[in-house]
Image 1 (cartoon, rainbow, N blue to C red):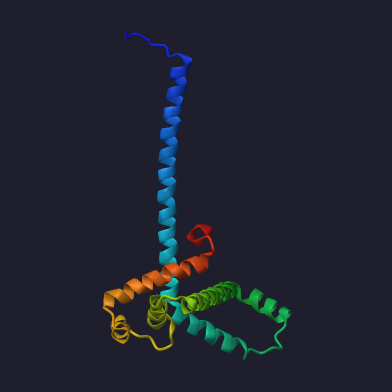
Image 2 (cartoon, rainbow, N blue to C red):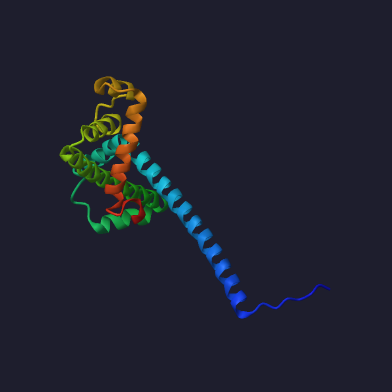
Length: 186
């Protein structure tokens, strides 16, 4: 058997401080990595929501138009009666309605963020900001969609610059969309 060494109190403290610092630094690194990964997921989710905005807006606008033409004489009792008679179909209808409401809320939030972003770009002294907004708007938002090549031609840019501009615009939108604290707010 080997010789057993006893550590004095100061040596024990040094080891504890060393191990604690090492663990703390590792945890900070893990936390930083997790935050960066969460930010990337949020950016990608916002980018996907922007990419689908035109399609979702048309769907929501169509729902609103149809909802205004529904018979207003339908009572709550009528609805409950219909739901009780149609079981699974009623559940599906409820889920569809919830999805439509969620989609409408998302479209409204994105519209508000886009309007705020446009206002920021319009008041900016950097003409690149407005160009970035136009690139995002024309690629994903406007009723008449343009390709990156068409936008590049209109703006006298390279196609890759259009995509870079859109990515930068989405970063700006993310701060507006997720709050003043940026992506950390979720």
